[in-house]
Amino acid sequence: MGLLALYLRGEKRLAWRGFSMPVFCFILLMAGALMSIAAVVVWLLPDGPIEPRVPLSVFGPLLFVTGWLSWKHHEPAEKRSLRMAVSIYVFAAVGMTAMSLVQQLTPDPLTPVASIDKQHAAVASVATPPPRPASSAKAAAESSKKTKDDRVAEMKAEREKRLKEQSERKAEEIKIFTTGSYLATVDWRARQFLEKASGDTGFAVMLVSMFLLGVWFVRSGVMQDTAMHLALFRKLALYGLPAGIGLGLLTGFIAMSHTPGDRHDGWGIAQGLLMLGNLPACLGYVGLVVTMLHSRTGLSRIRVLAPLGRMALTNYLMQSLICMSFFYGFGLGHWGMPRAQQVLFVVAVYAAQIALSHWWLARFRYGPVEWLWRSFTYRQVPPLRIATSRARGSSGAAAAPRPPASGSGH
Image (tube, rainbow, N blue to C red; front, side, top):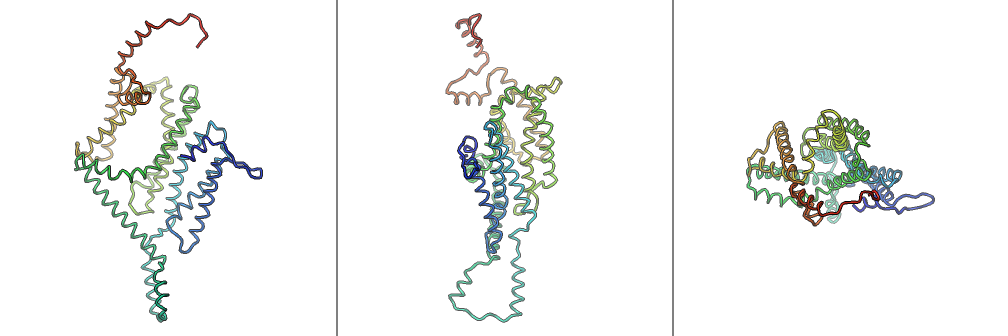
């Protein structure tokens, strides 16, 4: 977050022999260069660590390129939130895809080759006489040194242990959510909270990028006057939707499921491309909706969704309650519903929420949770019922003095 703020707000620059660059760009360039050098070192060392090879090889050059681009496109300042938003998203998606491609095209370093080496060693021991016994101290020192095969075997054992623990945890999770009580599910969530919170850190950065994208759309005036920027929204729909949906369909041809522990099943590549396509698809849907709103045909009837959006937080929380009651074992117990039936379930829930939103906003100014949130935010309780607000408005209008016939034009 500090680095993001440094890019968005920082104006300090480092100058040396006629070159000048922002501090943020210098940090990225140095980090990328150091990681790239470290990648070369760990690949060349015969007994170097195995785990950091792929991450260093991918994110080192990627950080360096990002730093160079941020240096070249640091101005104008009003576009920084847009560029930062897109950069974070593309950086994460390209990094995930590149790491998965490297893993796909290179052999698994934990492949059990030790047995082959042991066979070769056994043949060699038969053909050659045994070595002379060394001193006890020297023999102990040599035996304490771990060979590459020993380290690979330990890492493989650790991987198998993690996979076994994940399998057992998944089986426990399914059992609790399909047959367990409400207290059992709460206990499960509580025990997994810290691990999930730490794992969601990367996702939190992705959310920040989406907020920065929204900041640019609002502050640039694009969302304030959508009719004036209708050409932009049409381009977003025209180019964003095919790109996003196309990448999504491509991932389906690459992989539809993942086998834990298998780095060659294409799952990582599919997930990276899917993430990369999510951004243009999202912008494309926004462009499509805005274009339909300004249509003079029947497409403008998409306005029927407006109340659903005005009660977005209420409907979001309501979906959690509905799905919890419908799917979990302490509710109706429909856990494991097939995908095709899930689509029908989604359509039914959304249709009910659209109808409920229209009914509610015909009588109230805000959704119930939106009203609570607004009251907390502004430390004031706004009127909720439409009739009450109108009564107050009419009484206030009667008591208020009329404005002058001519004035300064405020």
